[in-house]
Image 1 (cartoon, rainbow, N blue to C red):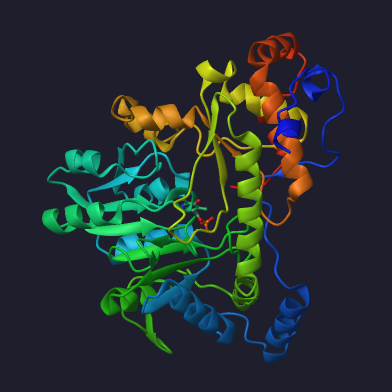
Image 2 (image 1 turned 180 degrees about the horizontal axis):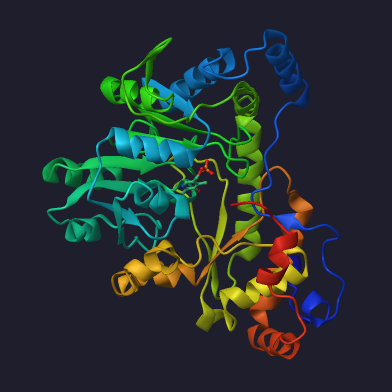
Length: 423
Ligand SMILES: *Cc1c(COP(=O)(O)O)cnc(C)c1O
């Protein structure tokens, strides 16, 4: 198996050299996991029979109970998506002024703050776990700082204990963006009950999807009450408004989808894990590429297969490897390139932010996410590993071919309009 994967004699049959693409149809990162169709359709019929489509219907209530159970928390408030859930959690926690966040995350983490005129102060991450570096967090605190938003990236948890310690010593609110970490654990405890609150995403590309969706989870009853009011215009009773609020409600179709998908969690994890382990074996020992590893002692959803490309050792850079893969119709993605601090409006607000973010800059030039999930099987993974092995073991030659092709080829940026709509 291993020797076959490592068969690296030639690059002539790669698509960048004129060979046929390895796949007829594009392989996407984040192709949705789909649970039991018959069960979902039954629930859709229920919804239509009941004509209770939204506003805290029975499926939303059940989804909230299931999420709270799984995460081991007292309160769960389901919402239309995680971005609105983050905005509401930030507001309900009373964050203002400056809040410390990683730049190496999906843009919504920063936008949820800036949207409310709270300044995201970008902090660097740990090179191993890709999550906030607590030592650096402490150094970013100013008199204007009111909170920290940690991100459990790829399902790898933040150093929760260190961040909790900083937050309590410095009187800061602590929120976790747990969009990637549904079904994951930290020191044997499920993600969901850490900090003041945590936010899950059930977007189509996430481990468990409710089409679009998100949730705030917390053990703080007062925070839960406020959050619930804010997501429903501040209504406290049938026709009584006591609060400023917005519309963050989840609808019944989303909740039915989320519930149905949750029932297949075990299967999704098994497939993700099988893919991840096959990638790991297939790429083992290749100079210049490294898969991020998950802590075997923890629960994990294995939703992300993340490669770090070391340009010097591989002889070609991450972007070049991506071009090789795209030519084969493997639509590997540069999550989270180029980092929040390098896009607007943050780039203009903080033009020198990168000086304090060396690990973020390094990672955002090296990281590539590979296709996995229930839409990807062993044959696909094997082929992808073989392409990567070929490219990486002939780095210099591949680079030369790409240069020759450069003027005529379609770059990922140009093709992306035709490809994945995933965030
Ligand atoms: C997907 C994602 C979000 C946003 O979730 P939506 O439900 O799409 O609004 C926020 N943070 C991170 C880290 C994400 O990956």
